[in-house]
Image (cartoon, rainbow, N blue to C red; front, side, top):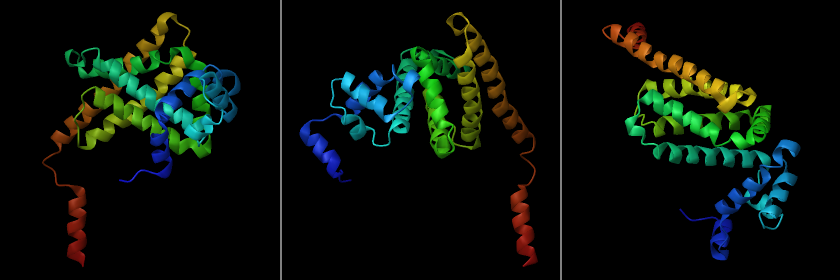
Amino acid sequence: MPRSTEARAAAHSGFDREAARARILRAALFHVPFDGWTAEVLRQGAVEAGLPPETALRVFPGGGIEAVAFWSALADRQMTDALAARDPASLKVRERVTLAVRLRLEAQAGHREALRRALGLLALPHHAGRGAALLWRTVDAIWYAAGDTATDFNFYTKRGLLAGVYGATVLFWLEDRSEGFADTWAFLDRRIADALAVPKALAGIGQRFAHLPNPLTVLRRFGAARR
């Protein structure tokens, strides 16, 4: 696939867009709690990263919401790498999922207020779709990192349940004042246990009624007979 004119120009100039985005984000994160995910904060981050202020708009043309999306994707990759370094094969699936969520939150512990601001931005009606997509990408990354290979209905069930667990845990964690976030990890353990019990229950129900005809098939046959 041919690259865009901008991409070709960046490659020709030796400009590393992803590295610039990461540098600007790291610097901007310290200002977000006070000023929000604004274009001005991103420009300030560019200057502090040793880049021209206009670089912020160049690498984040969508402004703050694009910076939030990049931060989320970066956190997903860091979580995956951190989990891989913990020898996940030696853990049970439940332990892998729990550890993945914990690693992702622990990596953002120094920027809880920036995350709170990010959630506020994603909660706006015109960003709701982006917020849902980022949440799905995160829980999908967690399940893949945990070794999930489901391709049937369980694929969606597991991710939908984990999305609820992850969202609730993040909100709990943002308000947690316990030492080492002990209350959050206990909360997470309980929610994970409840969530992982659902696919097993559904699988059991499916086996019990596997001998029954598919209702959709019956309806299609009924409709064909009436024609």
